[in-house]
Length: 226
Image 1 (cartoon, rainbow, N blue to C red):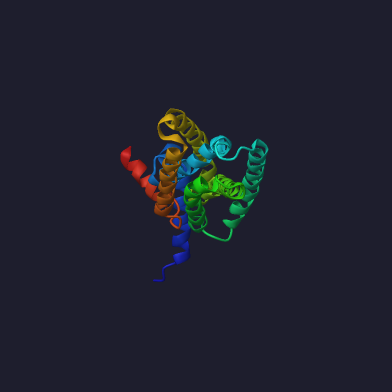
Image 2 (cartoon, helix red, strand yellow):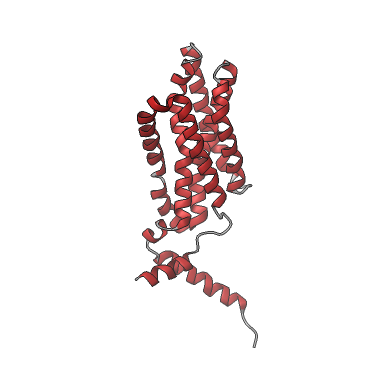
């Protein structure tokens, strides 16, 4: 007797859809995939929030030109916004890990290079613009990544909670800076930032992008816990 593979595939797809609809949101938010993306984003954003708050005071230690430093921030902020569109568009052609891997590697290098670049106006201008460019990358890619991993139906719901990474990163960066700057100085905080960025790179490497969130398996685990 011939086996109708199309009917089997349709039944499996229908079952996956039912599990996707029935699985409680809390069960999705407590999975490894959610936490991997969440903490990757927090670690990535840490340096961006830190540097955007201190680039002017840090640069002023070596470059006594307030007008120049203001123009650096304005230009870097403009590039930050423009490149958000670029990175989000590139996800249509390249996988997330390939794009993000290059960006986070560049950011880690810039954390150390900017400490040398600050002695030269042109170098500081370029490095700051590149840092802002890298910082804005995940902001635009995170919604697409979340929906891509958790599906078009549940992805937006998951992103509602994923969005809190921006507040968590901003608060943790501000608090750590406030309590640690007098002990570590700017250079010490750059080292701390590099640790966070390396952690973000490691979590991105661990993210299994090709295997989307499996609602059937998650639903089975949820039912076993009941």
